[in-house]
Image (tube, rainbow, N blue to C red; front, side, top):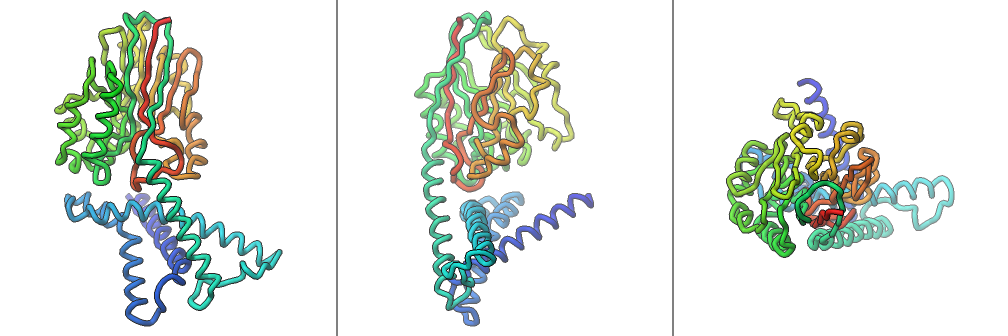
Length: 385
């Protein structure tokens, strides 16, 4: 308990420090201090900066309608904070190097009223951030469809085709319209089945439960159904309520369980590592694979890609599908972090006779912005050799 309080206080101090730093970098764009306009600008800055956290707090307390404007504005603010911090730090590092080396005059300024160069740099960084966020918004708005084909010597009774979708993150920001578009794209592919590799919900399940998403799910047309596993965001919210909602609307949730399809294909659904939030422990892959005929084609769904492949190497699985990483944590250059954490943070990798694919995901967490990679719907065809 004491440790969690320490980390909360530490995180709060970092957030306050970042806020103070950014304020003193963009203050040349505010009205002159010392009058009502200057005071109002400071108050608006504080409210805007804290809007996401206010929205999150209200949402967790059940005030969904009240939380929406804070959550929506705050989601954009999160992305703006990230890039403003990145760009201003870059400028300040260059200024520091310049101060001890070249001493170029155009880099000698202060972020204060009356300093035209400081005002110009503040305006330039804010303008660049706005351009990046606008490009990222349109990038996120138009997912691509990716087609993969695998051949197998396994004893499948027919070729089959299915759709992989992950990290939809339905909630306060993306909901009915977003899910309608996903449904139309899936139906256009005429799949035998659909698999959802976790994070279908963005956290709190109630904005989705109170929407039209349930009816939209029932309109997805497949020959053999829809299968899903939990992601970390289901556990951030309430995985039990989320799973009950999906089951009620025609989705089979695999929680450390196995489903067999008619064409001699097994889907093995692993519980997410975050199951520990519910004081549970997920089963080993070896235990789950005992229910799988090794002559059949096996698909493993695991929301988070393996960090190491020891458990998977000798399991006999044919294809493992994951998401979680957003192909670089959604915002450039956070791929530097995901590539350190995961051997395969996006795309395909082979280990022995097994293939692993990590999708970039379909939706967005937090800001409806993607500057790292295109969102995708993945259509996979399995053919017998």
